[in-house]
Length: 350
Length: 131
Image (tube, rainbow over all chains, first blue to last red; front, side, top):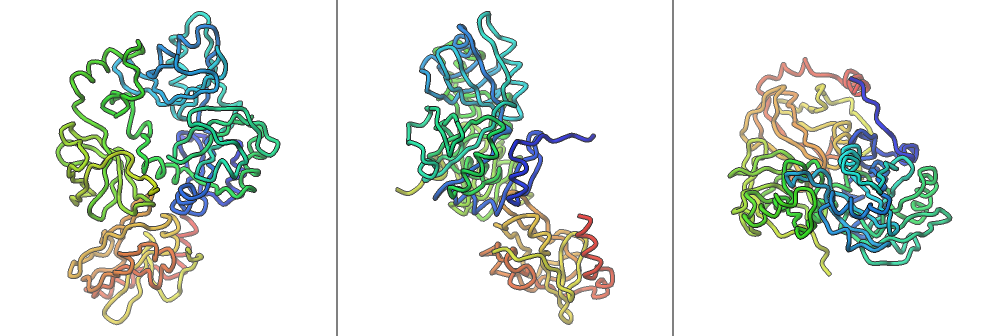
């Protein structure tokens, strides 16, 4: 079967910059330019830019838009004023995670949802199916491009004002009009810039000219793993409930969203399994799918470029989930020891 | 700094991108520039132990980058006499110098005639061209 991979408006720029391109969620995306480790460190120490235009954007608009989102999303949307953003989950009837996303309140009656590329259609249908009279859901993904600029110097390099995380404002970078979202997936200060798809190449060039390092999906994955941001499809998904996945903090259980009753029940009983962070105490790199002795499973694993040890996220029986608990990962037949650690795994020494 | 593409003429190769340098009754083994470049910067080397026997065509260890794991396929059979400790401590040495400081193991050959089935540099370049 031949599948056609989609390309973002920045495809030519990636080829020009010497990127290694790989298939990802149906898109042909840069996995690295000069190397995962160098790009990772650029973001931890200075600034890096990621093409995340493959991500989906859904707009929900109308007098009942807020009510609709309060019903389909796990977090409390009513806490948002225009200019605010919030990390939240799209849940199913079992309390499982259909997607994790960020909702931005654009205006009183208009919201933008930035969703994972692979879940764009599923999310659209899940919300559309529950659409209320007076609310309209539209997939606007192809109209916009999204560039994440992340790192301790990211905002200064772009010449943008600093602002509180999980807010947004309109702005401009070298003549390109952008929606400046103070959000990200790296654990560093930074922004995600939404622009019109046609403007993306010009914006990309402007950002590079400001001394920001181009970074691929490889570094994006190691950065988010060090700070324990879950990856949908790996660490979280429809088959795990949000409480077991450690995302109870984004579930407003006093509201009545899809699956809330199940989650209230899991919370009061206590989950059977827990998504934990761990680091290896022996030399070995855990990988997705490896078994953890005693009935656990690695859902993400890599070498930590900052700590230079194997790190991962995985599900273990709840009783084995406390920080400090030893665990053993089956590394292709070789038992290798590690221990559960508090999240995040990596934190800059101040 | 990663090395630039090269395939020395004096080495023998297999189609799995491993090389061998025969020195009398022994051979030094490693992976080619192509293999190292495809994997990206190496971050882990899982070597065999001295005394282990390795068999031509079979896995004798692993190398890993941040994103990928690759088995090392022995181009020749023998007994491991030495493991490159430098690569163990600094796996990126393989990217920097795949045919020099980035060698992986030294083996005592048990079947020196196996060399006749390996690829010379021209044949190996053809493999790379098709990869």
